[in-house]
Image (tube, rainbow, N blue to C red; front, side, top):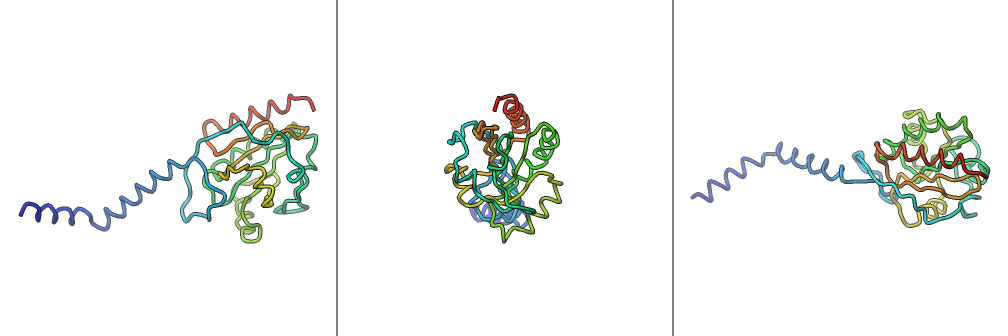
Length: 209
């Protein structure tokens, strides 16, 4: 009899509303545990939240010819070729429109670009998405965040070579005037990543060519 009453109480407790609320809470808990997005994943139906990880080790010492000379499709204008930025400090950011951490990072990149552009720093954002299927989403992204730096799409070969098996995004590469990759950042932490990016750019600027 006692077991029957307990079963009835359990049934009444798990109402549809409580079940839905529990699913939402568990989803939020899972989301806050994510440090970055995976560029190989399909766009999620809900935004990804949060982020924390920076790694100074790139796996590459300099930009290889495959990356340096590749013609990446641009959102507007001529194709983006990293070789054309030789002699300048360069920040290359790999991202996607559906990636929550990427969306959190973009306003900070816009701020950095405004601060460092006059000092000769160039910034390029290369989406890892399919350029044909994401063309409209990318243009809307540029308008939404008022992106004033060069935006385009990384070729598959460029993305694979730069990522070196680490497919999490966003990823940012600080590249010296002579093509050396000085720092690599994986993921985004709103407290630590912006000052670390700024410090890396400052260090790159004081280096001799």
